[in-house]
Structures are given as C-alpha cells and as structure tokens.
Length: 245
Image 1 (cartoon, helix red, strand yellow):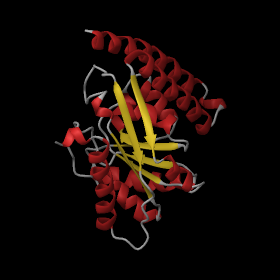
Image 2 (cartoon, rainbow, N blue to C red):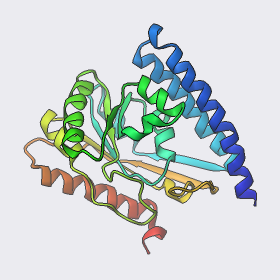
Image 3 (cartoon, rainbow, N blue to C red):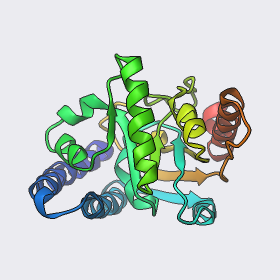
C-alpha cells in the first residue's frame, strides 16, 4: 500500500509540474533558443530526480563520468540500455552535454510532454516506415552533430524487462559510421525501481554506468555493433547480477 501511495504522490507532483514546464517551453519559443529551452528541461529533470528520492526513495549513482569529460567539446553518439521511463526524464540532468534524443513520433502526440519535445527539435521517427526513419536519423542526426549536440539513442528501440535483451537496431551504428562519430555506451538498471509499463515506483538504487568512448575508425558496422552490445550487455551483468541468475 505504501508503494502505491508514494507512487501516486509522485505523479501528483510530476503531471502538473510537467504541464507547467511544457507550456512555458512553448510560450517562450519566439524569444528563446533551443539551448535555452533545453536548460529549462535540465532543471525539470533535476527536480524529477530530487522528488523521486524524497517521495519514492529512489536514488541513483553514476559510474564512469570521467569518460564524458574525456570527450571534451567533441560531439558523440550516446547509446543506452532502455528499461524504464526513468532514463527518459532524468538523462538531461545526469549528462552535462546537450542531448538530442531519437524517439518515436507518437510521443509528440502526448499533451504537454509532446509539446515540450517538439519545441526542443528532437529527432522523431515513424517506426512504421523504416526507410523514412532511417533517413530522418541520418539527415537530422548529422545536422545536430554539426551543431555540437550529442545524439542519444536507445538502440533496443523499446523498453525491455529487467534481465532481458532485445536485438539492437542499426540506426545509431550507421549514423556513427556515416559521420565518423565515436560512441559512448551506457548501461543502467532503472527497471528495478520503475518497471516497464508500471505505475509503481519501488525504493532502490539506480546505477548508471558510462563506458569509455568506442572508436568507429576503420571498423565495419558489424564490428561496432558487436563492441557496443558486448560492453553494454556485459556491464548489465556487472551492475545488476541478480537479474541474470
């Protein structure tokens, strides 16, 4: 019962606060830049982490932040494990770079959240049209990288249950090769505290593990995919061994 109550209280905070933040993002479009609006989202993201801790006793730690610092000002492609809604609402705060997410276009149809997403000029794709989705990632991704942004992709394409694996889609690897942009792999186990498609938020610690940059130079798409999948899935066994027993 306590978990249900805490989860309800968290949504009682999240929904109206997200609505207000989204409306503000839309209203200031004529007088602001995408970077300035992203700054508002980063503030919203940080408050989400704080309230998850205060209300639901959900904490987090980040391993490997030095690998982000080693990249300097160079744009990168971030490929992350995807288990929960947690990572979608807290990554803007955790990562010090401006992230441009690749996400399904259906998110734009969500009230408030979708409006804010549209104002940030993220890359949205129609997953039902693979050719169009591939072109959107290639063209828009190249443009965002040239602007100095980091491209954030969940290569599994959907949230996967704890302890499972979904074959990685190739869009991120193709973009990396085409633009000769190195990859930062990320493993995380948020599904333990915020399960896929669940209302309940369980107390616990989320571990986000950031790997060293993976170079794409002189490598094939298959080699890069094997290296990225190998690191992420191997690291998942390290940070969440109980899920793979």
